[in-house]
Amino acid sequence: MKTFSHERLAALARDRGMPDEYLRDLRVVSCVLPFKVNEYVADQLIDWSAAPDDAIFRLTFPHRDMLPPEVFDGIAALHDTDAPREVLRKAAADAQALLNPHPGDQLEANVPTLDGHRLDGLQHKYAETVLVFPSQGQTCHSYCGYCFRWAQFVGIAELRQALRDPAQLTAYLAHHPEASDVLFTGGDPMIMKTQVLGRWIEPLLDPAMETVRTLRFGTKALSYWPARFTTDADADDLLRLFERCVAAGRHVAVMAHFSHPRELETPVVREAIARIRATGAVIRAQAPLVAHVNDEAAVWSRMWQLMVELGVLPYYMFVERDTGARSYFGVPLGKALQIYTDAIRGVSGLARTARGPVMSAAPGKVLIDGVSTIAGERVFALRLLQARDPELVGRQFFAAYDPTAEWFDDLRPALGSWFPGQHLSREAELVSAGAR
Ligand SMILES: *Cc1c(COP(=O)(O)O)cnc(C)c1O
Ligand code: SF4
Image (cartoon, rainbow, N blue to C red):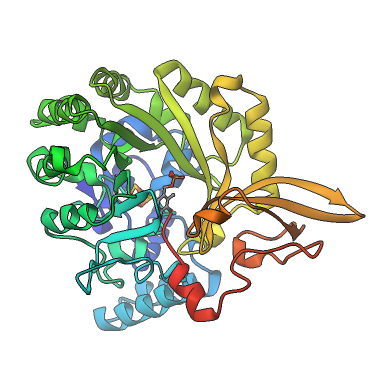
């Protein structure tokens, strides 16, 4: 797999006909935020005749509006005058610090302990699911411009949140029989060679680990590198591994990240989906709703309909987190709800398994369930789909309607409603902050 970032990314864009003015924007923005594109994304997903407005181009390539204008101008001035490397690096670091690199302090939150030791690289926020960040899986085949892990990819957040030893996972799960699901995440766990992945998975198939019922893999490989499941040297081994999981009575859930219907249209992704399904694994799909890429109801209707036809189950529509190029990709909650509702109206019940818009916020997964006027007051009706405290799952609450609100922290209780997190101290809130 050939990948392109920094100067090689600029050369790729130039070779595909992007003008010099754009190449300058690309270089300036990639001083601050991480970008990586591979040959599949460049050759088969991006429609270069529509760039820079093409959705996949917007998803994966820099844009000047990803930085606040004054930050862009500052870095651009240094870039244009060939400022010394150190000066540019310092300005980039200052810019990164402005972009909320540690949303919800998730690097530190919900990290469990075993025998009194922190298990950095595990997250156990909701009783039934343990998240694993295998150290070998902390990058991706390409990067999404909106990624909430961008700070790790530019190296300003330590990759502390990564587990090296599969035995630590197994030991933790043996002590936590309530965890029926193990979710491998990253980065992208499918970046790992099958042999490496097998070292994580095989021990969980042991009869002694009967409490683990579902193996989930959070991945964008179907979008960014479907050859992982077709022609890569160890693609067949991966499918055999899935089959062994299924034969051991486990449910294999490929949690695929699809941002746009085009990602479902190439022959190779279709073959990859068919091959995964033939193992008995089930593919479920989720993605954030982001401006410039998929902020139209018709895009989601088409994507969900294609998924149903291909045997992929629509799962979550997320709200983009408040970090990185948020000002570029963010969509207000009220607009997100409108897009979700219109998209759901455009498909049959089979595609309405997609829940959203959902914020993976500090207290839990918060569903924006509707906008209502109650006793003369305009409110968001909200619901906790997930909560640290299982007692709170399903709990409804209300927030004052605010057309500019883009994230949970922007919301205020309405109608004297109970509100999650309100009873918590600031420290307890930080501890309860977590990843999506
Ligand atoms: C979303 C999420 C899960 C999985 O939740 P489901 O609703 O079961 O898909 C688990 N852990 C964390 C921290 C999450 O954000
Ligand atoms: S695939 Fe996921 S982890 Fe990787 S860049 Fe995209 S959003 Fe980030």
